[in-house]
Amino acid sequence: MGLIESIVLGLVQGLTEFLPVSSSGHLVIFEKLFGVQGGDLVFEVLVHLGTLVAVLIFFRQQLSNILRAFLRSFPGRIQSSEDSKNVKLGWFLVLGTVPAALIGIGLKDYIELAFDSPRWSSGMLLVTALILFSTRWANRDGARLNIARTIIIGFAQALAIMPGISRSGSTISAGMFLGLDKSEAAEFSFLLSIPAILGATVLQIPEFFSQIDNTGLMVNYLAGALVAAVIGYLSISLLMKIIKKGKFFYFGLYCAAVGILGIIFL
Image (cartoon, rainbow, N blue to C red; front, side, top):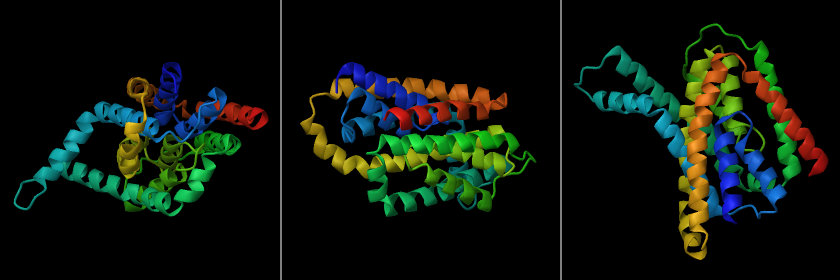
């Protein structure tokens, strides 16, 4: 993989990991367009680490509050109402990760087959488009996160293991349909991406180290990872602004267009 291809794929990963348009689906399609052989584990791990860095930096304050609240939650420590809220949020993040972990491990072989099909990814982008369009009719009744809503959002994230189904799109949409404030739904979705991305990366670490000595393209790969990190950070900031303006469903137009073009030409 050349430097230009690495940078472009890193840009695609950073732009689409958090925008509700499916990073995995776009990578499958762009690899096909560039004629790049998919399944380059070293590159995939590095660009995912890049997007992980982006979300860690963007939500550093929230993550710091959760960590400090957990440290203060030991027996005998006085805990404020804000600490209790952050401890509960931390446990919700753990709970919301479970469905994706179980489904990802259980259906690993089927998921890998889906990544070999650009047409499948294009079809799933149409599903994402329908999900995003549907948020125009989502209820907004000021509901708060609880165990049941967290589990449902977790299953929405699990569906996004398939290429073409947007993780942020499905989880934010699920939160909005459950009555969460759209900004709260978006923030929880992004925080929920941290254990999801980290877990998927950790599972690949053994194979990653077995292949890392076999590549002379590390500079190119690191360039792609850096681009993914910078663009990922900007993508989060952009999406938070768009959601606050109530324009979230517009991404459905883009997903529908790319999905239709992919089915026709791929």
